[in-house]
Image (cartoon, rainbow, N blue to C red; front, side, top):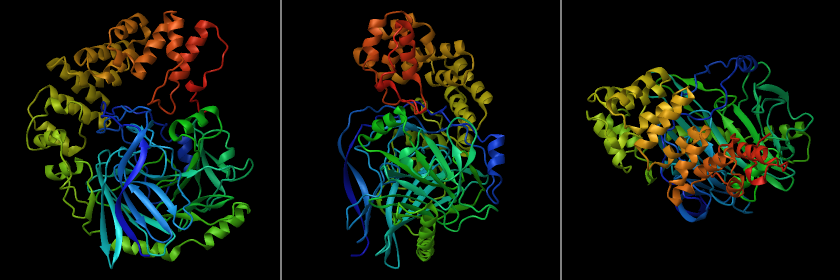
Amino acid sequence: MGTVIRRIDVTVSMAALGPEGLPALKIQQPPDLSPSDRELLGEQEGRGLADRPASALPYRHQNHYGRELSPRSIPGIELSNEHLRAVFLPSFGGRLWSLQEVPTGRELLFQPDGIQFGNLALRDAWFSGGIEFNLGMTGHWGLTSAPVGAGIVEVDGQQVLRMWAWERLTRMVWRMDAWLPEDSRLLYTSPRITNHHESATPLYWWSNAAVPLHESSRVFAPARTAVFNNYEGDLERVAYPDAPDRSRPATAPRAVDYFFDTATADRVRHPAPWVAGVTDDGPGLLLVSSSELRGKKMFVWGNTRGGGKWQRWLNGAGRYYELQSGWARTQKEHISLPGGTTATWVEAYGGALIDASVSYEAAIRSMEESLPWVDMAEARSIFDRVADAAPEVLHQPDGWGRVEVEAGFLPHDAATPFDRAALDEEHHAWLAVAAGGTPSALLDRSPQTGVEWKASVLASAPGARRSLHLGYLAWANGEPEVAQQHWREVLNDDAANAMALHALTLCTQDGWDAFDFAERAHEAAPEDDDLLVEYLQRAATVPTLVISVVEGLAPARRALPRVRLAEARALVALGRLMEAERIIATLELPNLREISTELADVWADYAAATGTRDWLPEHLDFAMG
């Protein structure tokens, strides 16, 4: 049986994603590298650090999903030979959804009971399972729940899957080729990220694999130390896997990252860094890469009640841990990619044939002796030879890459074709701006970023919407004072522009000013659920006002999860505790943020008001500590 690439339909239970929300002006981020982090990590030759992007613009939030799953058929691309069957999901960021051993039917990757979105990505909506590919900045990337292009390229009778997209945060083309050689037990992939701009761009890449978690699971890497991140402060270096045995993810007491020191003590990088997870009952998962992709990591949710709750919230019955590969050593780092240069590497996935019961040292020796050195070199040769080939398109990306090409901001490249992607009204409206037009009302919630779009907006006629978009551009460029000045100009010109008021709400330090802006934004667009929620959150210190607004809402809007939360908080503050208890008893926030304490906070207020000593109810407990 030779290798086959074909388009298939994948049936999966999933939640409805819903429409896009407000621009992603502010996102919750872990702290930047501290001085002690920099001292701990040291410098990397040829890998200068870059500042993290200032925001997730021009993306908009994807936060209008629920918790109800229903069967749905979505497109997939299958690669198969007699040993492996790989399925990618081009509608969801090109995620490698399944990697299955054909003879046994054993699934090497974790798959949840369904695609249930949760608020863990830069844009909010993220789901567990498979292998996700992240480009942009710390976090799950902006295209994790968005379509990418997919097609087939050929060289010397070998078929290679190509996927591509315009990644709007970095303003670079994301592309990845995948090759499953005949008779191979490993799937090979090769991203190729080119900075076609004149100036340097931050490069952040992590391949994020979900692995089924068993009591016997062990994780091996060619390292005896790891950089440890417990989400409480600075990084620290720890022995690995020393007591307590950190190689056993099922026994981790709490959520933690281990970034493995795969380089030698004198910083000579491993020629093929790898990480593997195995169990007692069969082959686990191996991630091995060429030396460019030097970062290797394990993440575990841990054994707190909140960690278990997050697993059930995202997965259903199953549990997983993560093995990851990155361009940098840790996920706090962003590496400068100079203008006009390309970053590319080879990574392979497949079964890890290591006996889980052997010593750590014996496992390392066994794996090192079986690394696919020759096959990795052959894969690089294949990927280099198809680099410029035009694909036979099987799945179209979204329209943003085509907008860039037709606006003249991105050179046409037959290897990553955007020319037949569908364009909607928003895309056409931006093309009109690139052609000399003025931004229309349709684009109020549609930022653009980058020097090319700034030039187009500056060339448009003066007015409120020109100022609004200059504000977005300044904010994305790390110029908050300039952004606020532009947004205040909108108010002078058009006091009812809800998006300028919304932006000022988020970037204003003064609490009363923020409340005022949020109230005015809601009044300017009273039908907008996101602005309603923001207003109610800002009005929390005036509970009578919250109740007045909530009681005037139609039943469907009053039932919105975050409106119910605001109502419960206000009822507690007003001493209307029986009414508050009825809401709290069934309160659920589908897009609760991973590190948010808002459910625990409303319970704490309720408990203090009633004098109850009951523990935090399980349905409200998402704490990771």
